[in-house]
Amino acid sequence: MTKVKICGLTRIEDIQCANRIKPDYIGMVFYPKSKRAITAAQAAQLKAKLEPGIKAVGVFVNGKIPFIVQLAQAGTIDVIQLHGDEDEAYIEQLRQQVTHLGVPIIKAIRVQSEESLQNLGQYPVDFFLFDTYKPGLYGGTGERFNLELEQVKIPKPYFIAGGLDAGNVAQVVAENSQAYAVDVSGGVEDGSTGLKSAAKMAAFVAEVRRANASV
Image (cartoon, rainbow, N blue to C red; front, side, top):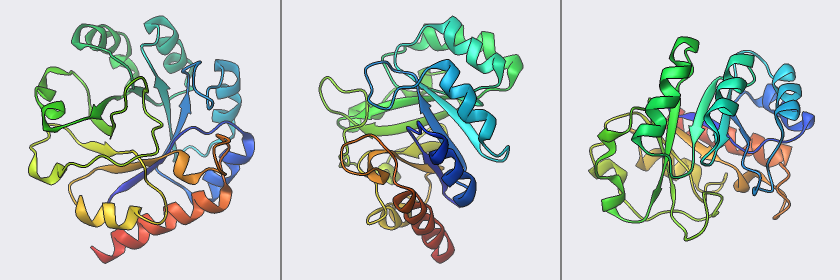
């Protein structure tokens, strides 16, 4: 069963919608340059309203490790997603500080070609997230990547992101039966505002569940 992550939630009404439609994960962005960025205080308010069965993922781009650890220790985030240029040494240092908290780590890989998926074993993480490569952007491209993941041996469970919406996610789930989860952000927003649409969020989750039921 492919799981669902809805990323870039910024408002209480987004959390209320998530509580109704129950994705497996929601994402909160701590990258200041993102239009979806929120502060630690805002994130704590959102997490307080989130149903316990839904995991909160903190998304960071080359973030400062003490800040990430602080959020994990506070219980503001349940999962860490690294979406920048974090290398093995950085991840190992972070892992040593959060292992006792039981907080998994996701490493985002921006897919440009099959070479992007080489040497994945070097990363001491729990999951990968494959997103579309675009120069100068750390995710949020709104575009699909063109690569058959089923033909590549991936050493850890993985999320698929990049250009997903309710109109194409069922096909993506069907074509990527080995994927652990699908991840959406811009595809469930109203235009380019960075604000989530409750109707689009609900439609996306419904489509994933429909696809799971038909597998």
